[in-house]
Structures are given as structure tokens and as C-alpha cells.
Amino acid sequence: SVASFERDEFVGPESIMAKMQELPLVQHDPNMAVDVQLINGLDIVLIVLWGQMSIDGTNPMKFSQLFLIQKVNGSYIIGNQIFRLNYG
Image (cartoon, rainbow, N blue to C red; front, side, top):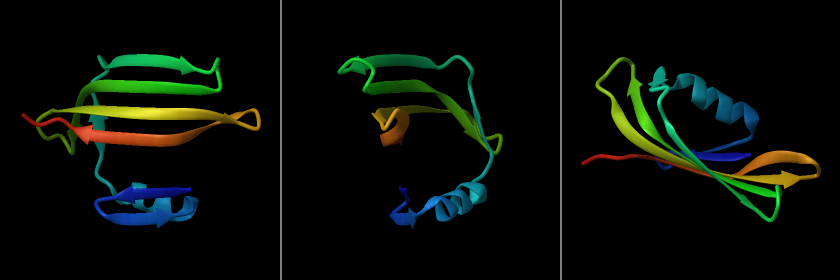
């Protein structure tokens, strides 16, 4: 597994989890919008989320997140993921 965060790359589950535990507390608004598209039956699932989140109790910020989930050997993995804060 590989993850990138603010130009840094983290390789392997231990490195990724260590970075995740360093990040501040994030709270999400439970009223998120979700779109799901199935591709090639159930082999690929595209999920798009829109909502608001707050970091360490700050003012809410709008965000969007996209997941491409793929079926590999009978299990699902996150093939790709994109996250963006939406300013403006």
C-alpha cells in the first residue's frame, strides 16, 4: 500500500497508519451526499461523497471525496482515492 499526503509518500501499512495517527481529529457532518456507480457488474464501484467537515473543532469546510473500489480475488480494495477541500 502507498499513500501520499502533502507531497510526502508513505509506503506500507505501518507507515500509513503512523501518519494517520498524527493527524488532528476530524468530524464529519452526517448529512453527506453520496453517489454510487457500478462498473462491470460489481467488479468496480465508484463512490463520490460531498459534505462538510471540521478539524479540531474549527469552522466547517466543504469537501469532496472519490473512491474507486475494485474486486480482487474475491475481496474489495481501494484502487484509487481522491480528497479535496472545496474553497470558494
